[in-house]
Amino acid sequence: MENNYTKNSIDNNTPHKRRVRYSGKYPKRYEEKYKELNPEKYKDIADHVKAKGNTPAGTHISIMVDEILEFLDIKPGQQGLDCTFGYGGHSSHMLSKLNGQGHLISLDVDPIESAKSKKRLENMGYGEDILTVELTNFANIDKIAEKYGKFDFVLADLGVSSMQIDNPERGFSYKIDGPLDLRLDPTKGITAAERILELDEDDLIGVLIENADEPYAELIAKTVTSFKKSGQPIETTTQFRKIIEKALSTANIPKNEFKDTVKKSCARCFQALRIDINHEYDVLYDLLCKLPGVLNPGGRVAILTFHSGEDRLVKQAFKQQAREGLYSEVARDVIRPSAKECVDNPRSKSTKMRWAIK
Image (cartoon, rainbow, N blue to C red; front, side):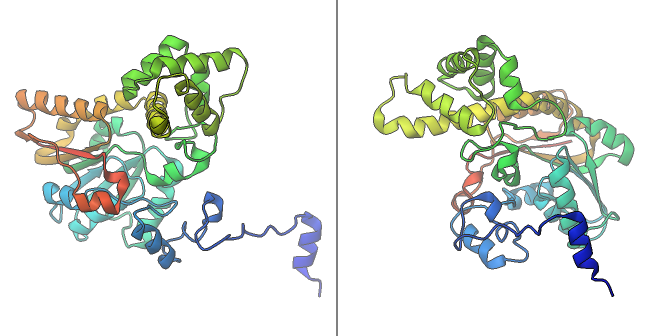
């Protein structure tokens, strides 16, 4: 009897490729973290990473869960909307409150992560009878409401998911080398690297100031323009970070503050480009305008923001719509994560929550 395995191996002429070796107990390279990337299988590794105040690679720790659930006051039988499905953490907590009765619609623009999260929640027992995942931008909530009906509760977490930040192929972090991409949906639109080529110096200054209040915007834009004119590539996260560092080296920054200043400028510049290429302010504006129209009477909405520009838009919209009678009540003050949560999950530190009731 012929050995099919041997025959196929010869015919395909494809050598067996071993998985990347797990170097050390807690490797730093993303592609080596296959244990950390599988927290269900390697729980001890995930627990160790969390105990250090970090998020296991490829996962996401939901922020302000208790505060969100307390405000939304979800009852079995209600219909809800999670505008930003992400890793599915907030959705799973809201589904648990429905207790098998009602329905949750969850939206996301990232086809890669939403498919993984949908499968993860299915394995938790949340099938299509109670959870529907739609691959669409939350700017389209009016169309979602037309399709499924209005909602009793709505959540929008405007932060970028940790699994997007941690994956070097997505280009969201200046800390790890990868393509300068920054698209929430990597199948659509142009990359941040392509956008930089389109922007002249004045336009880039505007993007950095308007989207991130970058104090060194003019220096950075000037250096970027110089690199472009010389034909030097700006295609990777590392290349862009080094340009920012070079720009700031010409500023009068004390030596003991330079490293921290570069980190903060890098974070702001990456944020500014991400907001720009994903049109985040435009879609947030659409969301805020359409929200009152998709809520049932007494319906509740909570929004988590992560920088001043987002929070300002939400605050102004809620106040204006309350004056117009579209909301019966809105949050007077911003709600912040607890001190303990900020220690347990440092990525929650910049979070602000605002709410409104129809």
